Image (tube, rainbow, N blue to C red):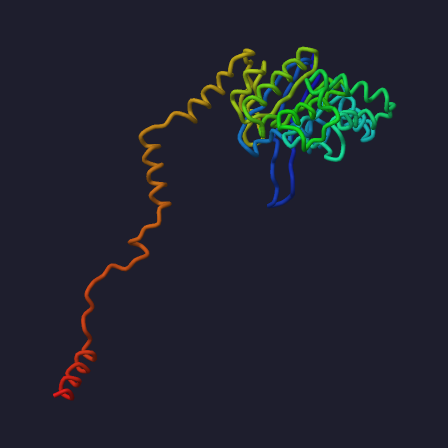
Length: 292
């Protein structure tokens, strides 16, 4: 069953000569319990699309149907409630509050829902245990590693049991070990029934997804099914293209290096014997006469 339906979705910023098209007629259907990875260069529209799907922004044109409801017809207060209860966000920057403990950070979304302190702490503890961070519940964010901090942010995103998880470059600041831990956690979450939309620049991350969507200049240029456990076909080509060097590439590298080295010949004048002027010769003759 389809949980997200986008039809000719466009997002335009500015007006006149300053107009920027962030999304251009994007049409997309995402099924319940899918794990979809979004790839593409910077400014290709990935984050803008995630913000619209996550109800943080609204499209300029087009239709968005979320769980069989037309988003444009939903009041702003109702949209905020859907965003709080249906969608979980995981960001690259973590966004944990430094003055709150790990437990308090994870329990915070439940406090906004009016859940009692005792109950929300119990739910938060269970969620921390699920992500392997139960022993760090009284720690502060500055006492955690990057991988641990991201696990806490994931626990906070899951505490409301959302149907959709939106993760924008969640492994961008992590080392390989922490990245693997976080991605395995997303895989486990997906198995429990959550739909995961993940933005990444790393082709290796696509092996966790069952579908990979490639974006460029605000449009979807490729949408391919991917076998879980393997890097997607197009992503493999991207890796080979970025790692394979030709002789011409080496020459370009040498040329760039030579341009970067200060050229002494350009800054230092070549020595050449100066011709004596007639004035200097005349002065020398007069000096010789006086000496005699």
